[in-house]
Length: 197
Image (cartoon, rainbow, N blue to C red; front, top):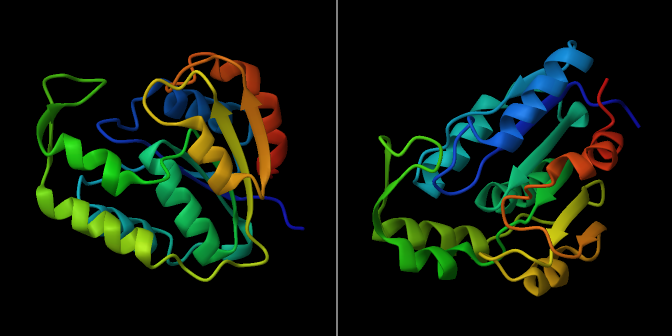
C-alpha cells in the first residue's frame, strides 16, 4: 500500500483552518513530513459548494496517495469523499445526520475561532445535506476509516457515530468532548493510520 503524499483536513461547522486540531495537524505535517502536500481550505457554508471546492481542489491529486482527516461536519464530508475516492480517512467525532442536526441552526452565527467572522447557514443548505445523505457514493472496497469517537461528545450522539462507522477501525473514548480537547493523546494512532510519506 503506497504511503500518503497528500493530506486533506476538513473542519467542522462554524470552524476554520484556525481550529486547534487543524493547526496541530498542519504543524506536524510541516515539521515531520515536509514532503506531504497539506490542504486545509476554509469550507463554504453551502455543502454543495464545499464538496465542489474539495473535488475540484483535489482533481489533480493521486487518488492512491490521498488521505483525509475530517472533524464533525468535516467528518461527514471526509467519509463521503473517502468512499468516493477509495482513500483512507480519519473521522473525528463525525456528523452522521447533519441535515437533521443543522436544521436547528439556520441563520447567522459567529465563527468559533474568530467571533468577528460570521457564518450564514441558509435553509437551502439543509436540502443540500439531505441530497448528500440520500446519495452516498458506492462504497469502495479500498476505503478505510479510523473513527475517533468521544462518548463525552456534548454535541453529537456517539452511538450514532459508532453505528455508522463501526465497520472500520474505531477508537472509542470514555469521556472527552466534541472538540477532542485531549487530541494529543490520539495523535500517535492517527499518524500511524495515515501512513504519511
